[in-house]
Image 1: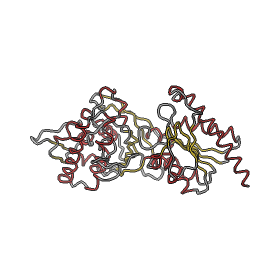
Image 2 (image 1 turned 90 degrees about the horizontal axis):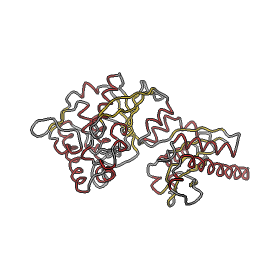
Image 3 (image 1 turned 135 degrees about the vertical axis):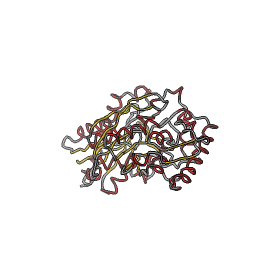
Image 4 (image 1 turned 180 degrees about the horizontal axis):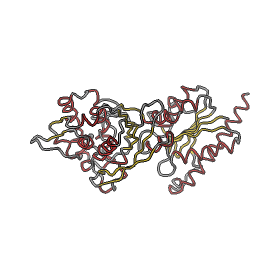
Length: 389
């Protein structure tokens, strides 16, 4: 049997690498002669950098930057070359500079967080000669529409009295004019790709503030105000800098509190589905071209899986490359039917039945359950294949 394993992290218990290794062990227990490729999988959220490094290799680096609350943090990043690219790229997770994990729950408030650290990291990478950037947008604590990042990169954001605007979410409404400042010299010749796992526009009922703001600690009243401020800021960018009006509605512009918009409108970034970027880096198409079985999955599989989630992206892409491949998705929890367009032939919850949360989240128990579930599924797959021959 030829198998490919590409499983997203089971958040809180298993990384993509750990889940993949457990699944591969299960396949080998069913078929010791199996040939298996284990690939990293992520969706553009936090963990994108680590996933890309596992596929591409590269050099780890670190920068001291402004964290989401304004105090310094040490942000990890990496430098690696994508196949076919003329030069190496900086691999960055926005969450490492302005992520929710860096803010204690009692201090979460999108009015008080900033993306300034991301701009400082890009600036540091430019000083080291890097001109290509891949930025994962998931897991942010911010809703500042990228003004913190833009200010750090040299854009001239000013209030109505001509003073420099602040860098936090609370300062977005005070921006009255936008100029290129020193940014042009810094960014000439740079290429930006922003990996995101959401397709939300910048504003409105499906936008950054109203959809993602509550999990960042925003109150309903504050988030309605911030939504209007983002709309106003986008119009200002169009008037002062000639930003493309389509950027406001572009899928992914609402990612990371409007950071997707800022990257596209100001830095001409390409917003790309994170899973596709990661599968490309891993050589996924070549791996599944002659595979008999794909094992994918993540912590929860439900109807929303079909809409941009990593397991569905992997499964549908595998079917496109190799229509005969069988696709299995393992998960900690399955809820409802998965639409056929997800490309998944079977969903396999790994827990044998109701278990305490502490046991379900234990890494050792989770890995054992993945290995056991995949082993039994692989045995059934082999038996069915023998019957059809």
